[in-house]
Amino acid sequence: MKKRPWLWIVFAFLVLIASWAVLLKIAADHRPATVELQTRER
Image 1 (cartoon, one colour):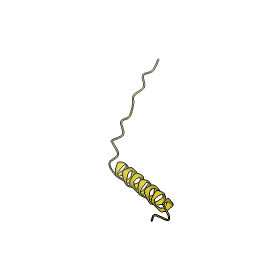
Image 2: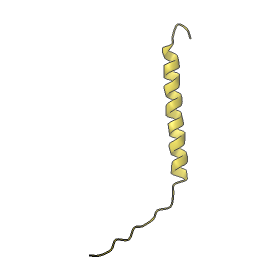
Image 3: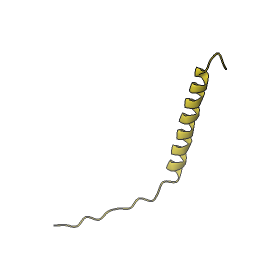
Image 4: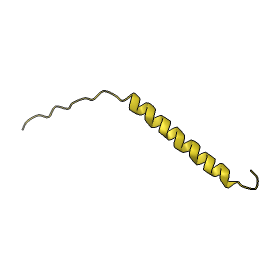
């Protein structure tokens, strides 16, 4: 690894992308309820 430090950078980006994917998956599974807004007539 000392001869190829760019592998650590690639590995770090892969971990970052994977963690974002997991975070978005969890957020999509636990989406808050939809609240309809009522508009008043003028």
